[in-house]
Length: 329
Image (tube, helix red, strand yellow):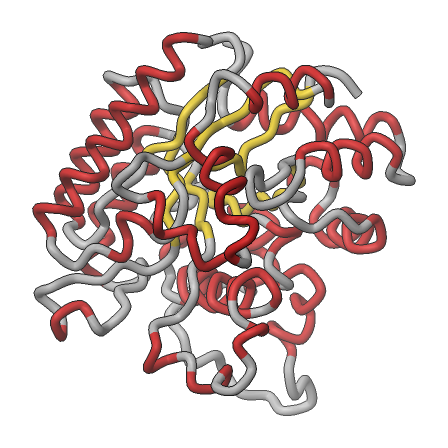
């Protein structure tokens, strides 16, 4: 399929590069560094070779979210966003941008999002999970975005009418004891999905989407496991008639199917895609690769031959993202 749009596609600046060092064995690190720092060379060739017209680029993880010092977090976010804007300006026909945001400081994050959208022309934000703040337990307590101090930030996201991509990161050490002795379960094997799914469910149960029904949240990797669990999340012991103990007014399936989109990033399995289509409909799924942590050709070759209708392939591969991010205007 030609004309695909991919939207979980990462880059790094020198200050954030080493944040990605632990995600591949040492022998692969040189290659991953080259991939992360390249935008205009190999990346464009891979796009051309695999029918990808547009990539929406975002900073690698955890980067800004793992900088407890507010001033430095703001500085790195602004620096990364300015670098990205310069790269997009070289090929605005091929690249768009997601803002990196210092959500340690909700007011600063709101201001930076506004700058990125209104001045730099970015099409949304991608944030690498929870943030750490020096003002909260010296940065050892994760700040999730269902907390009350983020409501004004979410109001601005809704006002600007841009999507928010909730990207994974590993849990902090004190919250990762379940993985002790099993480090292979961290990262993309399991911990990324579990961490992101819990964060998404916290947003849903908090009542955020009752207050701001126009919000659009994107999660990758075929929905981080949530689509397959929607019935159980809402019904659990279905014969026990007790009211919900959370503030949200509706079922989780309602929020997930109305306020969330998912992508195929880093999860190239047709059976999982078909389950997502049955749960969400083809209008809520979008193609992505997760470059440079996954290969562009692996994603594209799988997607182009997946056993789905051609109408759905066009929606997932291009038209859903074009509409959500207003790319054809």
